[in-house]
Length: 336
Image (cartoon, rainbow, N blue to C red):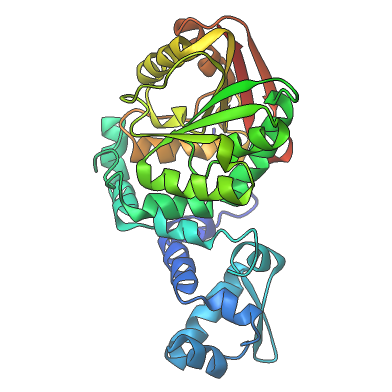
């Protein structure tokens, strides 16, 4: 259906086609520590150029471009951060997310999107899945930079999943920064968490567990979730932001392995961005489908009914669904 407007405009088309310029400009500003320099008091082109060891012409063009995009403001020749930039792009901010640019705009990631027509024809990535080596430092940077976002979802999930006072053996699959397991440990002094991920990433999660004062109850299982021995008799197995990387059959196989590692009354907890069944809302979960199409062989943004179907096929019984507040993520629990 064509939606008629009073006057057609090519603006959206041009903005979208030029979107790569926005990505690269933002990444360049992050690489130059532009936002942090402004937060520290360097607000004019000459001062920024001096501190960043860059040309004044280049700094002016970049700052003006970022002002147009809404990342900066300018008044009488002085630049300032917007609220979003101050919170998420200033390295001194505890909620800093700038590091994620090294992963999202990494050449191997960008390569997935260069021929979208071919991706659509194939129905999956044409650049190859997991083109980054498991030991590549960029995975650590990704886990570190996403920690503030993961932390919000982890806290909301732990408020539902933790069982204060009683012993809990927990497995955290694809632990990343360790946020989900660590939040369980903070809420339950009798809990013990086993974190699975690549060895280099687990070094970061152990560091975060140490900072949180729970490292004595934090264990690690390095390697691939599909290959390592999980162990057994877990009360709870966390699967946060992982199943969207794989096709349903692969997820059913993984969930079957998860089921085998749970005790008789154990539960699995999947945390995901789940689009509605119309698949175009809410926006953040909905647009993940194209990202997974381009970057994985068979991944997708799955709806709640699709995830529940995978759980049933893997042998799980009743499932419970909870929205995790403002995080836009969904928690799906299922019992053995």
